[in-house]
Amino acid sequence: MRLFSDGYPVLGQDSVLDISIIGAGVSGLSTGIRLLEAGHDVTIFTESISPDTVSDTAAAWWYPFLAEPLEKTNQWSAETFYELVRLMEEEGVSCITMRKGKEFLEVESPAPGWSKQIPHFRILDSDEIAPGYTFGWEIEAPVIEMHIYMPWLMERFESLGGDLRITKVGSLEELPGDLVVNCCGLGGKELCQDDDLEPVRGQIVYVEQDPGFGRFDQRPESLIYTIPRRDVTVLGGTAQRGDWDETIREEDTEHILDKCESLWPELDRSKIVGVAVGLRPSRKLVRLEIEKLASGKFVIHNYGHGGAGVTLSWGCADEVASIVSSKMT
Image (cartoon, rainbow, N blue to C red; front, side, top):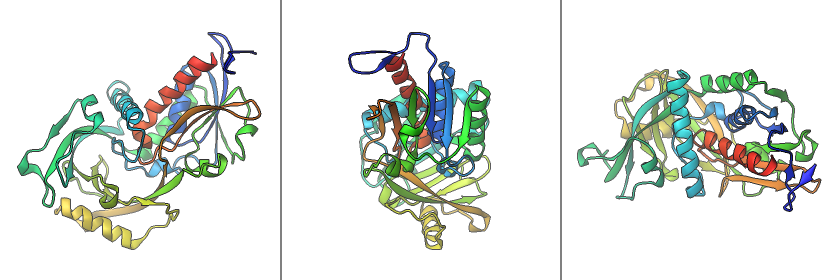
């Protein structure tokens, strides 16, 4: 195998790589699909698959939440936005729908960086702002029903020739192939000795009632959201940093309902049909980079997406594919 001066292998323009991916959440599956589409052989190694991944409990409204650096996450988010729209419009993925949502703020704020990259963004009129707030905006964005979308991703991955093995990965070096892509989520705390990675606990409530449009207060300390899907509306939420508890807490359910009623007074508690908990894999910065291990094996890390795993999924998958194309072939 010939090497560049910086140590990256040169395998030839049409080379097929044997790639191992860690993790079968939304990031691992999306990345696997992109690498299969590029012509590589891909095997996912994972301890859990849908419906038992963190991704399955995602709310999941397109919104860059708890994810930095902003310059990169805004771009990855925009790329994912348009891929989700493409899947909906061109491939008929019916579990993706477009819904409008209004975000309310306590003080007037500049529009977020991603606002210029999506088709529908407008500042709210004063009579549209919820009590207790002074400013806000409206967006139209994809809502994804994860209990359908995750199996769809799995089917797409396997239909393209991807292999999946259910096993616990003890080290990055033990995996076979020319390259490892690490989409391990919170598993990176142990697998990569990454002390910067921590859980942000999220509890949600499902209700069979449509609010018409989503209502949001996206500040982590006062997090409120009502996300309308075709089947249910997802109510949230919590953003409890460093909390590993995956059990449902009645006090959190009550707090979520109280908060959501402040933005949606018509909420009918008799229509609650479920509660769920998930742990967001949060990091100061999303880790998307290539690393050469002491053994000489190359790893592309793609984890630490915080509360924006779905929102960043295709953009990050494309970034991984680009790294593979530019560095490894």
